[in-house]
Length: 306
Image (cartoon, rainbow, N blue to C red; front, side, top):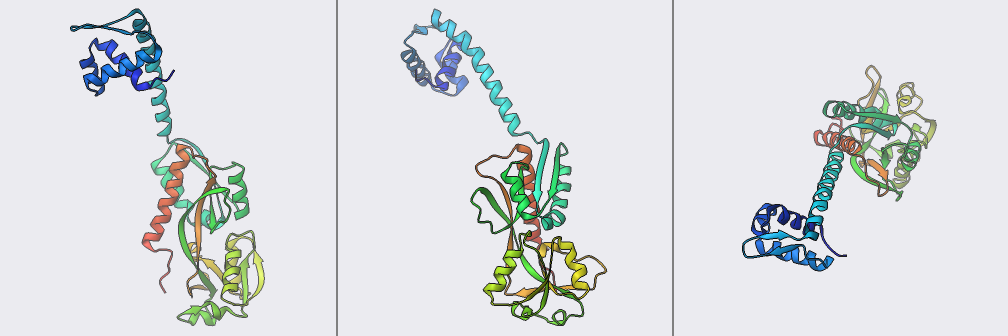
């Protein structure tokens, strides 16, 4: 049978009110529309539901039976829909987020604090991992979503870029480049460099930039954790390249950062499994990460003043 929910609700309204006009006022339809809807329902099920006179509308036996059962079923349906809407508005539960190391250290603390303030019933568990491990965690549903370095060519994820940040030069304060007002990538030619290894989402981007600009450097050390860059460069082992999100520098270090020209950026991206919806709680945390990234961009705090 081909009947609509609207026809059923209209019939129940007529049964309750005993009038087409009063039922129409209750559900926002004209008297003629109510009458037409009931006639369509009767035609579809092949049973007369109402006896109509000039003065009143009466239920037939079949109509009385249908109205009694429909009233209960429609109330149950309405309760179910309200429960689903309540779930959709729910902001509680545990949310697991995997993030590569620099976002974990320099973006997520503010996001966690803001989430705790605005959604005290949400518990966020942060997994601080290298890029490939973040991708693996999202792919295998070990976490709700991840934060990675882009651009990301993997089509198996739904991805959203939330931030672009420039690469900067990191050097000892006594280095000749520290005294240079405008440092170009070409000035890095033949310099000894300490770079993160290929577990980092940035390393392949840095390699691509150097190749694009035809700049040859001597990579003397490849390290895993970005914090290791600072003592390496301070000890004079080499200079380095770091993303702006890694700022500010640790206090007390004999280090400086300089902008590199032409400006080259990396992207920060939120990713989740393809075509999978986030829970309401995870969606709330996702939005908090977006807001914090937007705040960094708006205040231009990613761009140090030299």
